[in-house]
Amino acid sequence: MYLNATLLAQTTVFIILALFTMKFVWPPIAKALDERAARISEGLAEAERGRQSLALSSRQAAETVRGGKEKASEVLAQAEKRAEQIIEKAKADARLEAEKVMAAAKAEIEREEARMRELLRGRVAELAVAGAERILRREVDAGAHADMLSAIELDL
Image (cartoon, rainbow, N blue to C red; front, top):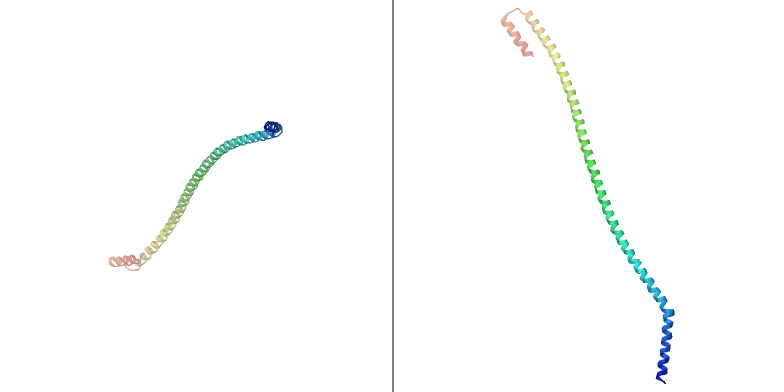
C-alpha cells in the first residue's frame, strides 16, 4: 500500500464529504439554529413584555383596591352620618312625644283638680247648710254653737 495514495484518497473523500456537508447538511442546521435563536429572542421579548404588563396590572390593581377602600370608607362615613341623623331625629321625635304626653297629663291633672275643687265646694256648701241647719234648730247659745262647730269640723 502506498501511503501517498491512501492519504490522497482520504483527503479527496474528506473534501467531498466537507463539500457535501457544507452544501446539503450545514444550511438546514444553520437555518434551524437561526430559527431557534429567533424564537428564543422572541420568547425573551414576550417575557419582558409580560413582566412589564404584570407590573402595570399590579399597579392598576393596587390603585383599584385603594380606590375601593376609599369608596368604602366614604360609604361608611355617610352611613355613620346618616345613623347620627336618624338618632337625632328619633331623639327629637321622642322629646316632642314626651312633651305631648306631659301636656296631656297636665291637662288631665288640671281637669281632675278642677273637678275635685267643684266637688269639694259642693261638699263644703252641703256642710255649711247642714251646720247652719243644726245651729238654727238649737237655740242660739254660744256654748252650744261652739260644740256644733267642733262636731262639724270632726265630720270633715
